[in-house]
Image 1 (cartoon, helix red, strand yellow):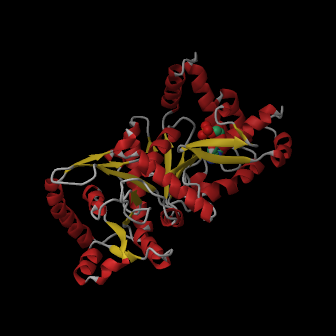
Image 2: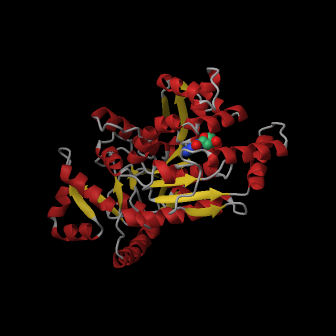
Image 3: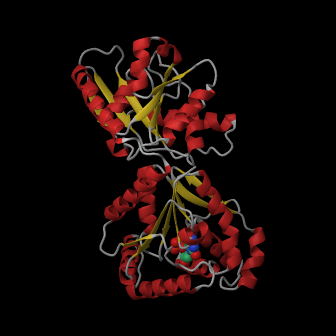
Length: 431
Ligand code: DC
């Protein structure tokens, strides 16, 4: 499962800036497919092959392996084991990429890689033929344009800011030539998919474009995941308000990193766990309804049983991997609920961070949803007006958690990554 957003358009329309910002905001994986064509272009140039000649380029493909890796959320392109992410950004390689991208065998060669990554993750994929050829069933399709002059101006400003000496007219000529190449080639030419939403960014700011696409993604998500009925959301909003009051009175609660709060439901919130009211501290600030796991024994007490179920708590047994609670978690996420989870599985007695159990990484990967880390800090022995800091961190996408096989080792390592991110959000760590 994964929500796919295809972002197509001509060179310099601002796709990569928009896609990167959006992916970071939503905790999605950003896939820059142009980088794949660029790496083939680079290989052709390095081997003295004419990039516009299929006879010269096609025989090279058998010697090429291209991979995408994500380091700190940024995409890196690996060509035959070498990270070429920086070498592919020159004007010479831009033109070589445009040329090799017209060769059908090259497009075929890169197709599987692009589809695989889209199948496993929530992605924003930018390119020329994503909505038409690579992901014809993408949940959201956007075709971004801007006038050639505006695109040349943006590129000019960008290069000047990097300290390069460039001539505006040369850039404009280059853009017009690449536009012509990209839209007149026979295979997968640049064109708007019939069901794509066209956004002309000439007079729009980055934030305006990002907001617009986010609205489209939200709408699509509501179609993929079910919508929580209105009466439930209204009830939850009232409950959240009522519960928040005594907590704000009793403690001096500070919320930080609120720019990282989830912008929708169907995500995982993972925190460190010290008190029974940790889920409440998180719920007060996150407006989307969350389900959460609670110790099975609590459900034996009739009043608690009712109260916990009312706020979408469900039982989990600590002794072994509780398969039924994992599938409950999955079904809640698919219904549009968040899942608040404490990966350590039990409360920390001394405030120190423990090891994660495998459940959190398993659910994130199975549902293809991001994990939002939350660090809850307070001095030991809470009393009236104690300071409690709840800090939200940047989401970790399933891709960043590097889970591909669901092996025990992978799940354990992903759990460790989540816990160390949470630890970094705690006050003692001097954030
Ligand atoms: O987006 P970019 O400028 O990095 O792309 C480099 C070239 O690759 C561009 O001229 C067109 C081509 N390309 C393509 O044909 N299909 C894609 N999905 C992405 C890029």
